[in-house]
Image 1 (cartoon, protein in one colour):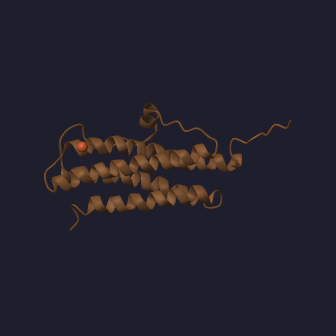
Image 2 (cartoon, protein in one colour):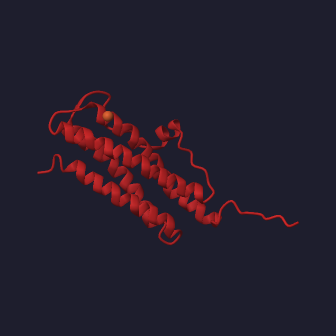
Length: 160
Ligand SMILES: [Fe+2]
């Protein structure tokens, strides 16, 4: 009787390592955004309150979904991802979002700064993966398009 062996992943180990290298910072940044975005959602006050308060929740939901997508791309290639809370805190830049109530224009500027840090990691992933793994690059491109749209929705509350 023959016994079938199934490889855990179809990915080349070099490709998997590169995808992990470029996608892991994106997972951590987006996970941080889900936490800090909620902080902003709860404490925003002032102009356009309802719009900003509600949109921050939409952003949090999107960030969680994108983190899942990037993390599961790494897992699909056969590698783990360390996205424990302490690791996220150690490896992502500290948010400027405050510990208490803040005016909406300030909250927006601070959340946009967090978004821009993730967008820089996404661009690095798109550039770095271009000749290594187009499938992982496609994940980064899709997330970048969505995050840039959410950035616009946020900035439009305060844009002239
Ligand atoms: Fe809420």
